[in-house]
Length: 373
Image (cartoon, rainbow, N blue to C red; front, side, top):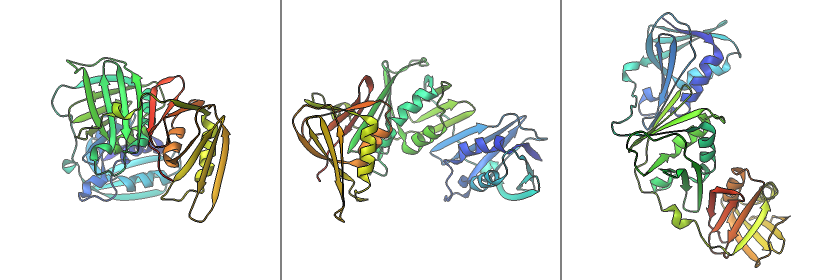
């Protein structure tokens, strides 16, 4: 049976979209596969890791039959990538094997029955519906996701808090050493009797996949929020994810209020200086010293080999002198993921948390704890 006969790029794009979550090695062999399903003139691709599922489809592939089968996602992806751009590819299902033909190239892959492939469906219950632009939501994630914990025993920190209320949509991420907060105005309308406030924690992997898949455009993104699941629909793609069950820390208590010292500095200049100074920090101990004086900021770094780096830049500061240490990675993260021309750094002293903001942007906050050097 001919599942599809179309250009290589038409198959490659949706396969890349779903393959990102497919595990190379899994206790269930079928979870290393992608589900291909042909119905009328649509070929659907589905990948899952049990916790998350991505579904997308091609635009009107040709074929002479309908059916479904699962095949190794990584092998199929590597084959399509290796074929010449613009090549015409045929996917033929015959005797439990998927045959890939393009020009004089021939491949034959083993398959597993589609009936054994696990798929996720939205759980029953009242859902809150929200529509925003892909660009807005992608920017919301980009401004906060870098502060998520990686493998913290406090599992709720290994994700991103999403808050929906009458004011709009907010995102918060923290690993216990720094916290990133961003917000956006609410667009669209909630369906049904939506709660006045709804909080959910997106898993880290879901956040990273959304950052990879969402376009930097004004095309719509529809969110369907339930108590244990969330669904994102955009273009031809649908992503369903389980939520992390836990209580996220009260971020409002972490963001400091009255801070008496404020310094304003050019973001690009600071980023470049910090990047150079970070070269001579040790891999485990990523500390840099920031020394603030009247009108200037000095950045120093050293390592176990007695090597040193020093950078000095202009800064709009006329407060009390300060000598404080920070993890340079935490500072580079926020500088790389904000777009303002300048940033403001507010603090009380060298032992309390510092607040980084962008002048003119009330929708972003970044809190970082100092370190001893």
